[in-house]
Length: 249
Image 1 (cartoon, rainbow, N blue to C red):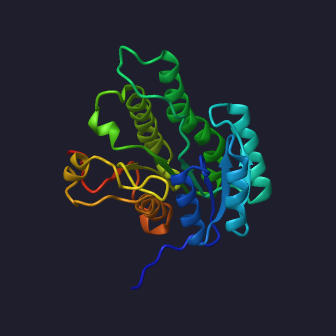
Image 2: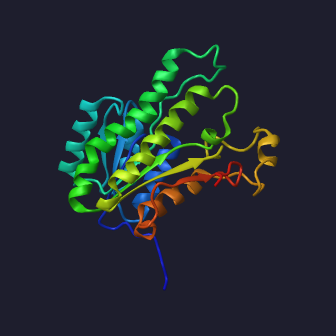
């Protein structure tokens, strides 16, 4: 039997869709046939440009750390495209990494809000419609850093590890309703605006596959988990990093 990733008839919402990774994920889901809801916070110009690329897509502004804003986005998406079948939580607040003893408490709050709270608010807003349909896909973008605990990453790791716990619990709570909850954990990927040139050879040497990954590699994993091919996969933390970080049993 020949298999392909076919998301025809599905509605996919990607948070942080205007970032480099978000744009690739959004384009890929649209390329598989999904109607895409493009979320942005401040980057209205990039959102409009992405919408022009993808016929049938719509753009939606929201602060994903604010419940009222997330609920308004839910209502707007449902009105314009229909209730989403696929939610990709990709947005994250950027901050300056430094040592634990020097990191601002505000940075820990920002990572809690954009990693943990985002996923809680998105689930509360969108899962009820998924439960009613007995189908849904939640795919969250985590990071290999959550497995590595490298110096200067404490706020980021704290947020992503907290997010992991929430999503694993959610996977158990909603599985009986035909909803899967999974995570994709990228490594240090390259893109058009972030080329491999100038990056440390020490990182590349630590990758078993001995090559840099791309953001398309991440998007491919997201598309698979969004599809019917992954209908019996839930609660997964999937590193996409060439083997640089491996989960243990």
